[in-house]
Image (cartoon, rainbow, N blue to C red; front, side, top):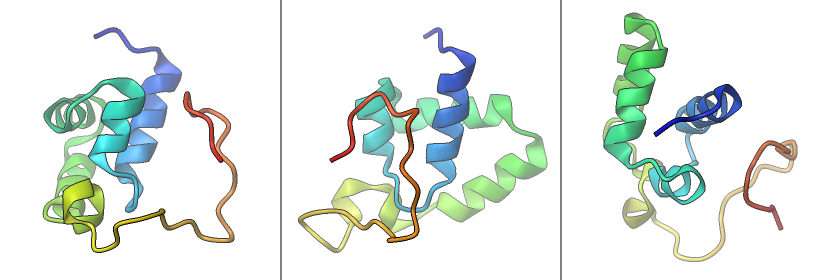
Length: 90
């Protein structure tokens, strides 16, 4: 899959976010969890990749099915609108 540099940057940003699920990345960019992991490995320094993997491994908020709430989504009142998303925000 050929991704533009701004798409790669956005995927990395979404992967680092605690509450952005791998399913959201799949929906927006068409990358499965293993493809996101491969992209992160290729684009990051080894030490940064290891830190990221340790951080997200087993994190319930990174997987839709493991989340504790069923409806809605968490959004901090201090969170800025992100204009680079391909899908619209409500």
